[in-house]
Length: 233
Image (cartoon, rainbow, N blue to C red):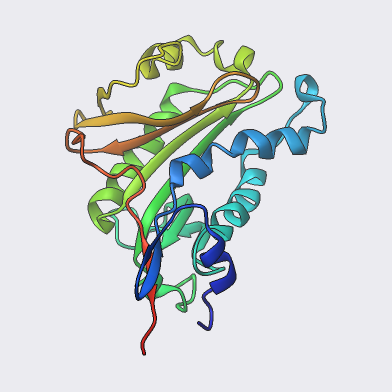
């Protein structure tokens, strides 16, 4: 299969079989919840005094995602958003479409199926609501320009996260309900945040939302990507 890792593809946990082949649908939000384990490994048992720059989380997440995807270089880190109205902006992580796996990461023509923005809060850090709103606006542009699925991820120690009262209130971090949130951008555009994953029982906490311009449909796939291989003869 060339660039495609057939062994990992066939060993994936999210698979279905057909007489002529098999397909997988990686659950991207479920995989993003593994950020909890990634941070705990990095902290080496000392979470209270642990600090890591947000960008240091990108490579471990890229490796984790690609283990469950059919090609090793499908996930890009900080790629430019050439198709949006702000082409010099970069997104934290993006999953390119399989047909674009061999293109240079600097190509203006790369199409992506998923975009992921991450915000982290560790060791007394503070997080501004304005910074989160900037990520929301960026993801909405990605959804529109690339017809992509977009996720926002928030992670950090509970004590640090709960200090940001505005964020706690707007994102309803203390609510156990998963009802979609109807919010507005700074420009007044309506959008929806739907919580599609979370790790809340121990530090670090992880929250994952899907962001959409349209009201979420109950039949909407939270992951939205599937890959198949078939026997030719």
